[in-house]
Image (tube, rainbow, N blue to C red):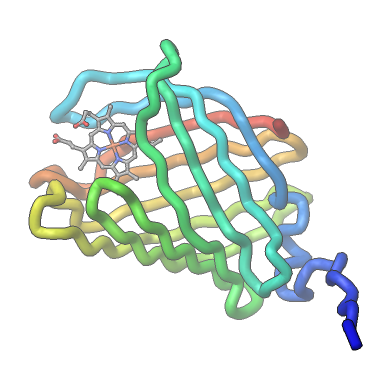
Length: 164
Ligand code: HEM
């Protein structure tokens, strides 16, 4: 006998505060760091509900000419009320373990996290990161800073995204 199990259509209860983050976001960003030339990019981010108490995350970026740039993938976790954790893998040989807070003020959702980074033997040195995701209505802003290649914590990326 074949049993058909119903596919869950409701979000895991712990994810309810960030339900509006689920989906695909696209827009533009710009980057800088004291050791490199400033650059612009386009970005697509997806936070996907896969029926578990975390969201699956994927990010892809391209140059304004359409050439693929940085990409990363991971999982956004809300292990306790107001607590946010993000585990991220990067093709540059880095893994990032971020921990911080989820704050919602006047409907504006803000995730603020600090990350510790491990790198492979050939990866550039990245000691620590800071990430912020701010969702205000249909506008998602991301900010990223890092302590890397001997430079203390400094801004690297900002992007402004809307619903795809
Ligand atoms: C350098 C773009 C995310 C770490 C660079 C460079 C570009 C760039 C164009 C300069 C060229 C190069 O060295 O390849 C981006 C884009 C990102 C992104 C578009 C995502 C939107 C990240 C993340 C990390 C990171 C998440 C670390 C966790 C670095 C490092 C350098 C670098 C360590 C080298 C700096 C140096 O050698 O002086 N990035 N990046 N980047 N990026 Fe990013």
